Image (cartoon, rainbow, N blue to C red; front, side, top):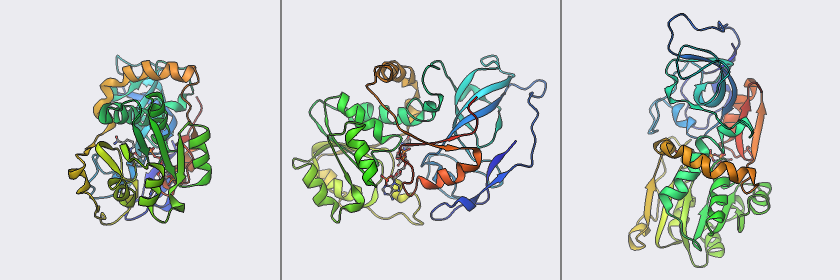
Length: 338
Ligand code: NDP
């Protein structure tokens, strides 16, 4: 049973060498007598920015730290091989927390979602139909309460979450601009995901001036994915009663000490509402989200781009890559296709 193990806690940017591929252990493909858990074969694993917080010893993250010497844990799509739990049977497909290994025993499978729609790519349950999809859905609709005609700005816009926020904003009749870190990503934003405009933030000397160019009348809704200098510039460009959904701040995750944010007092004068949120607090909306999004996928009204890494051995590089923008779209690792 091959596994990806976290060697030790990480400081600064994570490196491939912080993880280790261990092929030394074996696993029985049936559960011990009396187990209430399930044994799964992992198919697709998700690389997500919040996992960086779990690699630190002391973290301000909203989830616990990983245990050095143990496999990395993350969202994934898996197939039930053996079940001691009455809600699951052999052959069921599930998504939720699993291990970065070929097979995992999940002692308390109640938190997993059973996959009902299998006529879409299964890997989508790490992205569009999984946690990042719920993040885009809850963050955009629940936190920002968008109205037709509003001006929306999305950072890290070509990623797992951002590409969906932009498409939801268009479906809501908003004007949406996204930023990303390469020319290729900017092209995708404009030509594939239907953003009204897009720019490469790495080519802008002055982010405040760039935002003034794209939003001469200011921003009603900012979907915050990166923090740092970008947030500082956005704060100067918010409109009266604007809303900021604070989804993530990836530019801050690898800093040894968090950088202070300037311009925060703009939220007062402009009566801006800034609200953090966690996707899993909104999982009760998952059936409603599927009801909305599955028909949109089938009608070709929502598209989704994935960056697929092949094999468990490619997982460390894939995870590290999201912190330098190497991924184009949702970063997925294929462990097995069925
Ligand atoms: P992505 O697929 O967007 O991957 C991360 C991207 O962030 C990279 O491709 C890169 O794109 C960009 N990036 C990396 N470092 C920096 C930096 N220093 N400054 C600016 N951009 C950077 O990830 P997700 O869509 O999964 O996540 C996006 C954000 O949403 C993250 O902040 C994440 O933590 C947050 N999140 C929050 C959740 C919640 O429940 N609150 C749930 C899921 C995600 P580029 O080339 O454009 O730089």
